[in-house]
Image 1 (spheres, helix red, strand yellow):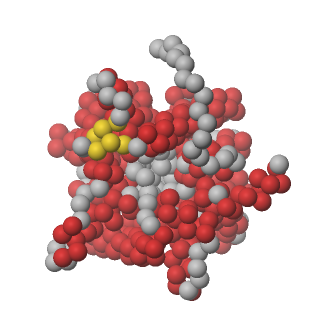
Image 2 (cartoon, one colour):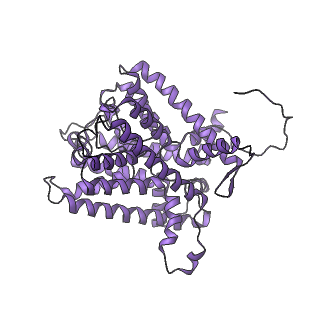
Image 3 (cartoon, one colour):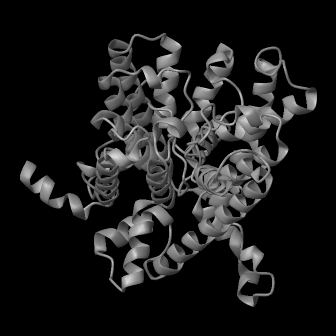
Length: 448
């Protein structure tokens, strides 16, 4: 039984993605342990290397060592490379390499790509090229803007700083070459606007960007038939509402706390930036450890939602959250089907949304209990750290650097699980969902 399961793992899309991430985590770990990767020339310990490699390839941003101080420029380049690979997606990167050398993808890899990118088999090559080209263009624009803005500051190699932060922002990674993230740029309009737009673009997902790209080709007759897909409408609507709601909540709870030193204009600006970065990226312009308890609570909720499907962000995804809300709304209106934007959402999709949310909550609960046992830290700090890891956000209330070795491994596993998706994990060792020809009689049970 076990032998058969292991032999069939490569044929499962979830396993293909998981194994790919695991391989690159291992490679990153080995490279970060080299003496040349650290500033002191002694190399990174095994546990810290595993944690950093996992955090980078899973575009999380949680760190156990101060990135700008502890790692050398070579180490920064390694982290940058891992972030870029993780942001594009391991399967996308592999597909690009296969296209470049003229190698055909295996059937299991094509199935995985189809599920990740929501594209037809014949369109995989075209979609992969669009993802790579659009990613480099957006990151290049962000890097140029930051380089021009930082050219007059004593940053040393400001070009590398600009490239690093542009890639980190678009990939929603949250790694920074500043020890206090972007706190020194809390009132800087250029830095915050550029980083914020890059985060939003990466968090929307390549599926949305692909759909919206058709409307930028103004003179193409073929694109006159293009329409905004339901997925795109849901993502844009949910993202917009969450950003506005998050900014209002942050301003309300932190006006007399971490925002007290800012002017009213800057308070609004910082609130919007923190709302954008909280769900996905992990950059911060305020001290997370000083946030009020209500702020930490809604941060946890936002980190759990995360970004959008097919994006560089983690969490259960905005689409999943929207579908669950739509299901509840339609249930209260006495409707059997889930209807949004004059469309009916497939029941299988609703079931997957419920499954993803349930598995995610149970997973985080389990890890929280173990972490509360292994780590000597306040309850709210441990819970915050766990949700940040699973959502691949990267915000920390100060616990990460003080984690025990067991805690670091647990958080690394949680990051990994949050990145590849709880449903993908469930499918690795489970059977594919199939339609049964036999149905048992229905019977009502009492709930609520």
